[in-house]
Length: 250
Image (cartoon, rainbow, N blue to C red; front, side):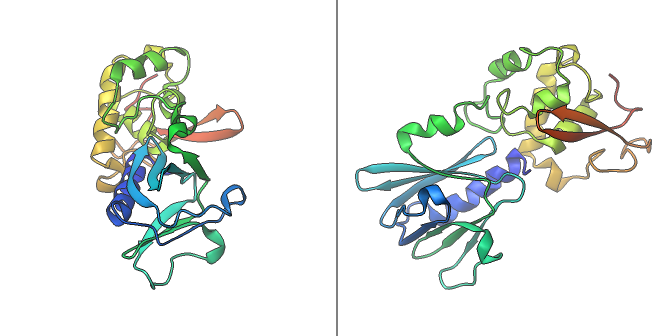
């Protein structure tokens, strides 16, 4: 699943392509919104909230928000009008077309059209956004420490505790801090510093600009020790936490 920095890049790409323009054609290829027509609406902006995307559209007196989520396989592509769309047609879930751009949403995990006043229904459950302008470290710490015995890897990835971090950054942040992913969050030596490090990594888009230390590596990028994989159990799914037993301590 894309991390918060990748979702932010997607939001910026959609914002540059669509904002300020009027939609000349729309197509929401999901059953609950198959008859919705936003043509004639003006795109105000697209922004990221954690791993969620919110595209705000005004159409006459109506104020709408198109809420999308990439989940594991989804993505947005932007082409010029008349250009061939990327990806197989059966994967297209959303088409937003203006005079200068066509935004195509492929294999999106969530497509939801909401009145603007109901945005909270889509993202109100999220914790403080690590990359958001309203980041609140104190609130994030409070939420994390509500479950002091929970493994820090799981706590960091819980979007209701703080929003925007996924498997890659949870593993790499634990490595950088020298903390094993199974360490109870209440026993992390300097939890505020860990959060600040995660924010820095996300903001610098660490996973695309730097070599990863442990995530999906056979050997630790620092000391060469064989990387271990801890299987973290969550309701209905499992996640693999990569870590170095030499560089990280429980």
